[in-house]
Image (tube, rainbow, N blue to C red):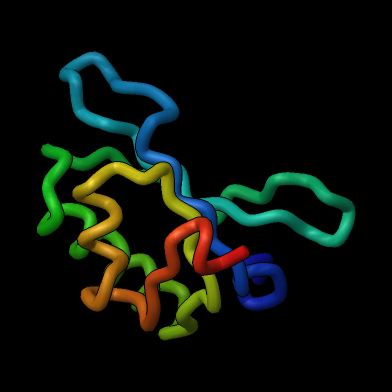
Length: 99
């Protein structure tokens, strides 16, 4: 329900923490109208490759009823950048271009 209301901007954080087996814990979150962080989903993935992130993002969108976010904020990691760029989401902007 929160994603349907506040999911226009999705923050994708794969740098939060590595779990016991050195696999990343990925947090997908947004911000509500009270400026509070809302966690939409979390996942552990086996490796930090473009294919893993593409699978994660496509599965996330499918589970969320097919609603794509308007913007995705990522940490700048090459694998996450390549996964969001023309693979799962509709556009890609560099910081300078966005500003």
